[in-house]
Image (cartoon, rainbow, N blue to C red; front, side, top):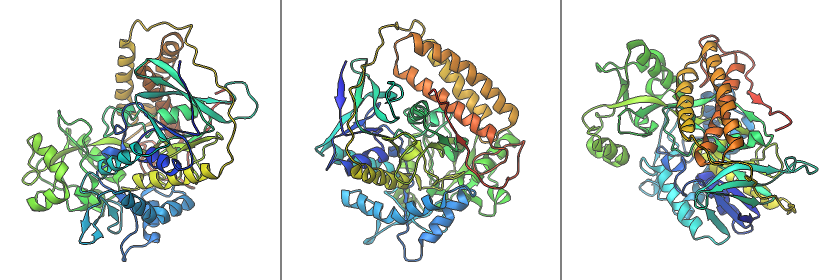
Length: 526
């Protein structure tokens, strides 16, 4: 079985992972390990843009305030200030790499999204993530010092404790190579998890199939604390259509005047919040969920047809074209939309350098819980967080003394056999995503959470038995991680006896004081 030695391992190939790789490449031998292909993470799906204070009539204080308001009192102030103040430099770095941001004359065109008090979203029409991702991929592929391993799925982190060695640090990882169907050993003194979120734990999500919580689960198994896992952001406006898998209708559509309507054309958001369609995502998603349940609706409608066709072609060319393929002319008719799981606000706890509890292990991007998002992420702060913390982690690694890593054992699968019933995995996957949607969705109750916890316990036992006796597959690894993340979400939700931000409980509908994060500590024997 293959074995590789590097200075830094980066798991994940979205904006966080590729940014970190480019910052480290001049001085370190870097491996980028991704379970599908470079472009297959969530970053490329981001439509809206990147929030940064770039206009004369805007301020860091306003961006910080907007972030804290959206985060419902749970944002860490030091983290928020750190990210906001580093945002303009991050945009400048991307422009220097050649990202073709939309301009207005010689200046960046800035749009506005829900929860923002000013226009501060730098964007590339309505496909910012795809443009940024393509630019970074092209640079990464041309950069010496970066080796890309596609179709390699993280199995587990290798720690000194697991090997029975003194001290505790991350020494590398095992990854399943899809081409050879063998588990490969990667050894390095520093590892960065940039694996994204866990949207696939829900039946309906805007996330790609890769968003299975791999890094969160692996870090938890390696002994890292996780925080705020109950805060799963449901984007209010996923496209509702039988042929539209995971397609998002950008926040910017509402930012440019889009109105949410009932099937009879009645507008409903002003009855739920004074900010109407520009309220933060949790407010809008709950309002839509309320109206759908109250009236037995499959969806509601988002109408931007009052804007001219020319305006829509200029600002939302991809949304316009995709809807047209499905027979929806957004210049003349509203778009059917439904809330859908979108962003994992919690994750692996880190400091301002991206460091986790495990020496030698960093977490950057959606996999991490930095304290920026609190109880609800402000629109377009996610790509920003990826870039700021990728740079911070790279700087910390560059300043750290080089550590010698002992030889690592090869993966031992000599006592397992090929699975006889792979249908068990697909059945459990479907069951998990459905009951998480039904019981741990936008509105929660104690009884629903208890039901989810009961089913998770049964699935966990089944998967452990499967994992122990059979050769691993990517489907099994992803299911194992999703069930672990589901358990963390449910346990966190049960601990929060209030309604705050994205966590809304019918049993505890009010805010409780003081605002405090939910932190889970893994058992010592992990």
